[in-house]
Length: 425
Length: 203
Image 1: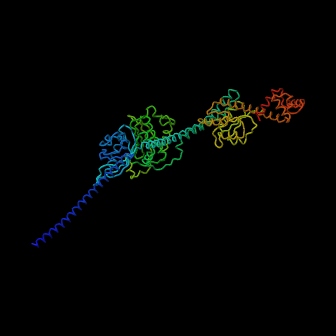
Image 2 (image 1 turned 90 degrees about the vertical axis):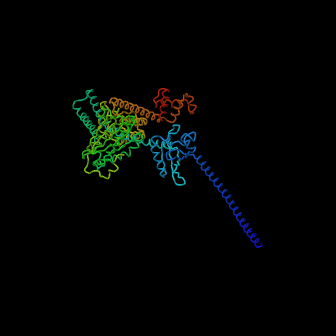
Image 3 (image 1 turned 90 degrees about the horizontal axis):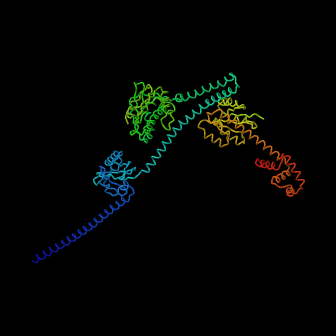
């Protein structure tokens, strides 16, 4: 019995001890749980705090910050963004597609940039926007992909700003530059015309003076027929001198040392396009190339031929702008002619050339432009003819002017490796 | 009197010869120079006439020659011949004192008229210059006393007042006055005043 009691007491003690231990563990666990809970709550608070902070930053960000889904739906946008597109409330934009504020001609480009962001790229692009209130503005967007926890791209994070002012001053600077170039070109031609006029004035004045002197003497009866011979000889000499000056003008191009070299005319065309493209773009015109890949080389002076093509392209661009043509496109085409020559053609979509004046367009000082000098086509013809070629003008049946000139082919052919980049562009 | 000469400066010899042929019809002497420098080297200041000058010339231009002449106080009237479109140059030339300009191609009568006018202007100018020089010489020949008396007479002072001012006797003043009038060949006080004023304007 006693033994039984001892065992019982022992068992109780053990149980008590175990209970105590268990209880204290339980308490510990509870405390830990509580601590965890507090910690968790703190974390949540901090997270929330962070989110608020981030949101505050984004909300107060002076530039437009927005999230867009792959299809262009706006998921979120900050107040600066709303202001940028002239939206009064977030719901005017959120849930709607971004494309309703992108100018139609820029939608394709915008889509392409969206595709790139959703394939993981970061992009910067400019586009013309039409805001909800119809205001037109230039925008620049920096777009980066936004990934979820699993790394899947779920949105485009875009920061957009208004670059209209910058764009306008850029445009203005560019316009100023073209204007300068135009004036420079005009004044060179004007100077040339002035120079010719001055040169011609000399013999003409001399002729007039000699003739007037004769008339005055004859009227005064102070002259015998023999006295007339000397001044009349002077008159003849001066008339010949005037003729000589005119011949010089005509031969100006022919006599100026032509640097004849084998030319890849397609290359020449591309060079011209490079420095006329900007001018064309500003007049709303595009320059299209349709270059035959299998052209023989021609013997020619690259600078001179460039001048001809440049003249034709500029004339076309100016004619289309002047004629307010709705579609403004110049096509420069090259093709071989029976392997012995090549032909360069410019076709525009302008008003064309009036049938009555088509024979005069290459005449010196003939111009239809208000500030034209009438030297461009005349010089172009001299250049082509000095290369042994011909130049013609045609007016298309459905409008537009076509100019065509030929150049004699040399011996060598254009090498094949030039073909790849001479396709349509 | 010396016949006036039209001096032509033009690098274009044909034009210069034709101008000579034309200008000789109004019975003027003509001399041609092929450059501005030739003219400066060969021009005799004392010869009356006018200058017909091409604005544009290689070397010294017509405008530069004009500047040189102005700097040397040579007053020969200049008619510029300008090419078409050189009106600005012509305006500059006239502002710098050119007599006139004609634009090429010009009407012969127009040029000849201008040349006549220029020559007339030159002779008038030469006459005036000669008279002034003469006047200056006469005034220079007055003694200091005569000069003092002249100044007071011109001021309107009677002999008595002049005598008082200069501390001379009325008689002495009268003698000086008579001599001075004689030298100046003045018949009246009005003449004297006029001449004194002219001289003042000159010197």
